[in-house]
Length: 600
Image (cartoon, rainbow, N blue to C red; front, side, top):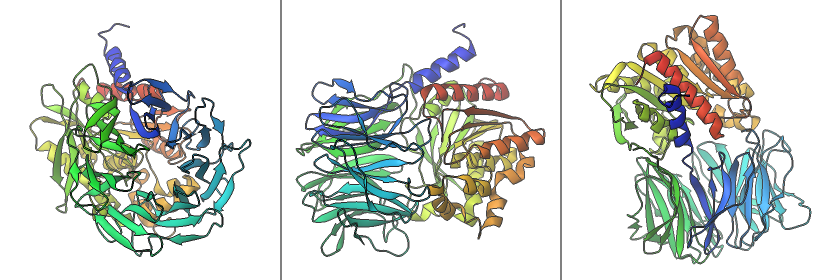
């Protein structure tokens, strides 16, 4: 193939961007060695690195992705992997010094997700829906025995997840998810299974983190109970007294308590960017760590001796790398993030005004080419999620081709306060789609935008938003790209994984009580309004948004003489986890848009 052909250029650029290996989820094996996930092989696998020499070694080499990673400072490692993107994790254990993982679970039709590891590295706590597909039980297993014998600790009433083991190994912290934005925090005795609520509440409370204090007498919690923003609370176990230690006007997204119990580190999510602070556990006089680049932190962990904090972090222009921060705030790079052979683009943070006066946040990426530009309007999934200014290969791919990209955080997104996350609930669903109408109006006011070449694209819930934008505001769009999106909320709720159905109904509406609303907002019933050509991409093993959602949309469009192209991957689930499939899919998207819009 000629090197100057458009197809070669597209595939070459995709291969480079999606080969920029990301190192994420760092945690400590001992005082001088970290384990982390890295996707340099094409799927995330477990690696270890010596922080002094930078020498790396690969600990797993399966062709399937590793989704979960937990380790303790004595060298024990627990990880979970799935098959073909089906999210049915199975758990394996790597004993200290061993290079041969031991399988702890062998039920490939059920989910087994590791949650916590005891301080001595022996007891693994996990959740599973093997008993009832719609519920999650909490189990523990001694990983060091000859033949693992899991034991039930708590029978599921909804979605249970163990998140920490007490220093004495006798108790668990368990999060019970009531919805995707509300949960209970439970203290569970491992021997008896008896539990008590540590965070009784009415209304809504989210707990992205909870962990025992080093002395086991209290629990540190990130929660938005009783407030709009997530702050740091400390709960005394014996009395149940809860004290707010740090509260700001943005969400605190990460928390790590040093092993000596005297210092903590927290990350503040301010307009999408992570800001790291070191502070005494009193919460007074926080010191910002200014030597980290502006980006997004994915995990933090203190070394066993408490002298260093491991931080996984990505920036808009480099894939995630791993750093250490000492108690004085000095930063050392351990595993560098990957950069491209060409210049990548950092976004401008902007806001546009929607129909009701709400200011909608977004990130605006612009190419280094002559304006006016075609634009891709990007919508994230969730909707309880947030588009962040970390490295996104697909965004940088479009920008490198000459597209501007507007990555939106429409109403319903997290990261902007509890109130904002509920502006799209049930009967208000189409208000979030109206935010995309406002986004296009903002774009059309700009002289550097080609108003006739605006594309909408999203994955999962973002796929629904793509389809909804095409049917609600058909005049705006030159094309649409839907990846694993929802076309019909009634069939989606009927066919999604049973363990997800209750939570999704809480967000979108109950099929019995809100059926008329679900039908009204479902794009499948308004296919005749679509004017723009559409590309749809799906994984055959998708447990969240089943393939049927895409199949019925394609059938409906074809039946009306519309233009639609479909790609289905037999070895993928909810989105694409394998590098080769990403290159295939997004290369097809680029050619689809090129054929419709011409060269960007």
